[in-house]
Figure (cartoon, rainbow, N blue to C red):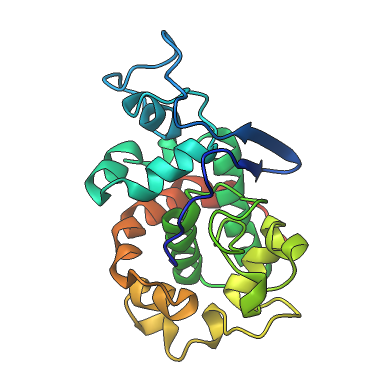
Amino acid sequence: MRMRAVAIATAVVTASVGTGFTVAAAASGSETHKAGTVSADSGQRGIKWFQAKHHLHATGKADAATTKALQKAPVSELRQAFRSPTDLGPAEKENARTVIGVGKGGNIPEQGQVIALMTAMQESKFVNYTTPVDHDSLGIFQQRPSTGWGTPEQITDVPTSTKSFYGIAPFGSNPGLIQIPNWQNRPPGEVAQAVQGSAYPDRYAQWEGFARDFLAQEGPSVPPIS
């Protein structure tokens, strides 16, 4: 993960989630939690729970204010917000299923699918950012056009950006998963870092259990995506 500074509070962040669903929200540091929507003390988790805890408008969608709070949140709090795959919203869940489907379509072993899920969970919580959060980073893997990951259109298309991460896209200048030497036998977090080149290399590993649980729950029903 390349840690992203969030656009200033007057910017507009657009998150494209799932297949064709797009949400645009004006950032506002003064946005407050809508009473009665969800309580931070309730059994619910995920983005909406996180928003309630930070007194943000609890929409369950990652607007700029939410993104800023997520980037600043300590690891312990993020682990509370996303305890299990059931804490993903419908659109984020669909993006995660796409990561599995592309892996199946590309004959990527399950270990590789786990690494991809871990990486996207750390980078974006499976929110597909179509407007940069920092510099020119986009998509669920926070890939940058300026560093060879493809065009903005390619990076913000979830199946295409996932192919780039796996190293099976017919474009791009960066090594993907299958180009990392001995990736099958190395620690998953280490492999994620080898692909991403994060300033915080130790943060991928925390999502391995989450990724394996998601793959076990959702994988059998996901068709291959070619």
